Image (cartoon, rainbow, N blue to C red; front, side, top):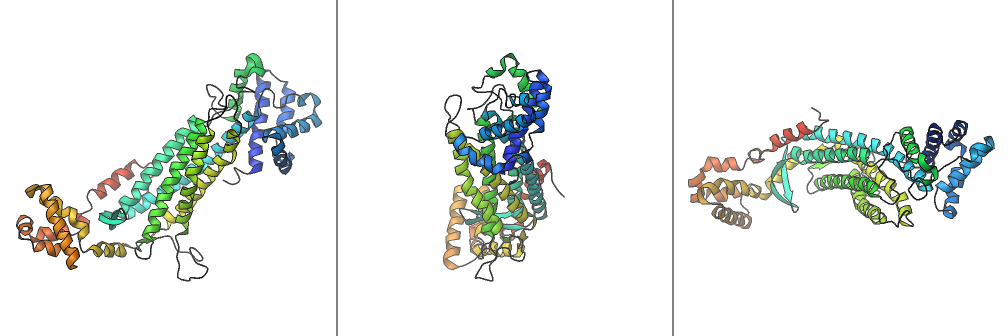
Length: 436
């Protein structure tokens, strides 16, 4: 991903635009075929001084101006006539925006590949741990028993949805930018639309209805989808980090020499992969906000708001890629301690089964009365450091309605996980890349 968004790659993609433009214009008859051949032959980044072009950008205002100047010199050294047809009828933003679109096209292929891999890894873990019972937690407190499979499977569904969104965005948002100086293709006269069609075909891009120089919704769409993806990855990292806390110890990142260590504490096994995803989820929302703020641009060409995008969107993409890579490593080697999960379920002396008891009593005594009775029993269990089952077994009304055997059954974790297995199967059946 760093290579895709390197300075050299950025310029190379703009040169790809310039070569395709010359070929398209020759095809339509706007410029001589010989000129197009010479221009295209010089659109190789190896023939340019990347550092010099970067250095000239501050005075020029954007990268396209010094790049086109260098390309024009190179072409002129070979063919003086062809020199006059470099960047013909285009504007700097056409080259810069289309170059960015080409970079994004490559970048989203990498993102998609890692999305598939991560979803596969989590789907495998979800199926493997479909029956691994653990505490479900709300507001950081134990709530009800759940399974690790249902917890992980929820992330599979989210990743699949992000993949669908990015697939749509790749088709709808990655389109040609070609409008000329003010977005009207005026310099090409009646041949503007024909050149645009030929140029798009050369680059393998769709043609938008109208140039989008100051309509930045497509780029904001991609930024926003990646922002949602990073939020999901941050949540996955946070959940695993919380499960890895010493006092919880229910799951941890894969162990490896030097991984998660401390410069001073030999015992440490820090959740370093999770920290990458969490850090990205802290940074990316502000960058997405920058993209949205930058989309409010003046008239037919943005001033300082368009340049604000140049580093912001690539940074969003790279942070998303880094978070994906980190969590893929974690998901593949997730270390689960099922015994610790069962032990943690026992910490509350049965309070996590209170809802199950309440719902069992509700049909015969009403929900409110059942809730009040079980709540009193929970307070007694806490005050007396007793197990809730024992408190309820001492309540004649509860015993009369349920019987001791039924009371005992309500405190079996595997009987209190609802439709977990069915939910996992249904979700994995919808997952297009499920593993068995």
